[in-house]
Structures are given as C-alpha cells and as structure tokens.
Image 1 (cartoon, rainbow, N blue to C red):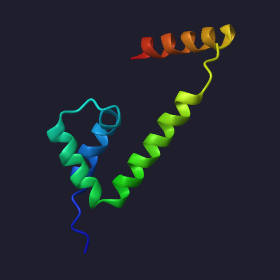
Image 2 (image 1 turned 180 degrees about the vertical axis):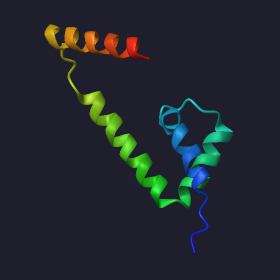
Image 3 (image 1 turned 90 degrees about the vertical axis):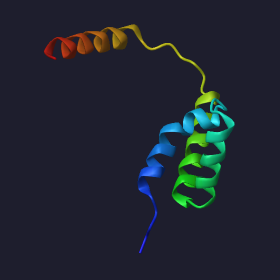
Length: 83
C-alpha cells in the first residue's frame, strides 16, 4: 500500500521553479530536499524542469510575425469580451 502524501508533492511542485532559481529560504529548501530524497516522482519532475529551463535558455529569441501577433491580439480581445 502506498502511503505517499500526494498533497506534499503538489505543494513541492508549486515551489520547484523558485527552488531551482534559489529564491526560497534555507528552511524551505531543506524541506524540499528531504522530500526529494524519498520521492522518485518528484525527483523526475525536478530533473525535467531543470532540463526544460536549460533548453529555454539556449533558445534564440525570434520576432513573432506581425500578422500572427495581430491575429492573436484580436482573438484574445474577442475572448475577453465574451467573459
């Protein structure tokens, strides 16, 4: 029977970005690290997030075509009016 606290995983997931950016206080970092030691799914999640961040940092910034920006802006305005 799995007695793993999924709520703790969710709370950790909500803080992972701040954790890898070193934006959390030491006490919270220690709690996250303790949880990670015993939670392979959270370890995998952290690893995946780190890889994603690294890949995003390597991307070259490119300008979005003006016609796409215009279409997107119009669509978003239309959606906002429907709310």
